[in-house]
Amino acid sequence: MKTKPKIQTLLACLAFTVALPAMADEEAKEVEAGARGGRLLATESPRPEFFVEKDHTVSVKFYNEAKEVVAPTTQQVTVIATGAKKAKLALTKKEDALVSTEPLPEGDGYNLVVQVRPDADSRPENFRFTFLNHICGGTCGNPEYACTCDE
Image 1: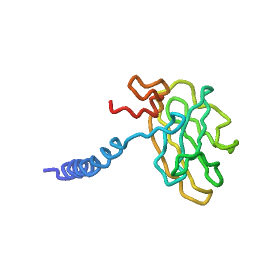
Image 2: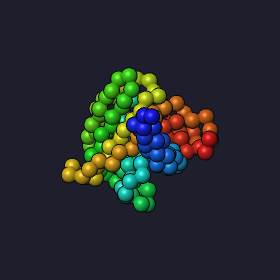
Image 3: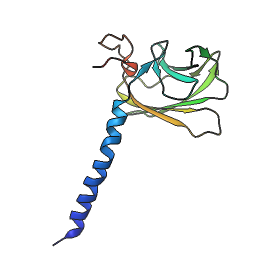
Image 4: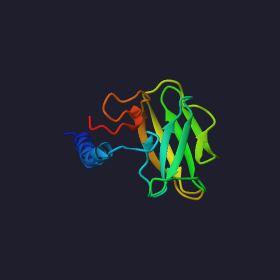
């Protein structure tokens, strides 16, 4: 009797059972939209709003607890697009936002990782979601990546 494959199967099932609640929590997070209709990221104040402009560049504005725009100071944001074409966009300060100098890859349906750092010495906080740029068919009217509908 070969016990090694049975033990490996048992361990794999156990690992999946432990990971399942964490995966459900990730999907259960509600999406919040910012003032411009972008995706408001769940960080400490000031909270960043990820927004894709018409020219497919990315801009991030920060909001305090009163939902007023505050100019970025030491914050750093990087956007990584994964899919057929991988792209890494660094954002730089421009007026009251951080903006990318390059656009996201063409199309949509690929995954994004938005890394937010309060300052250069901090570890990044990662936010992962699928980039779908079309307008939601529900009641919110936001782009799909920032959809707040329950559907």
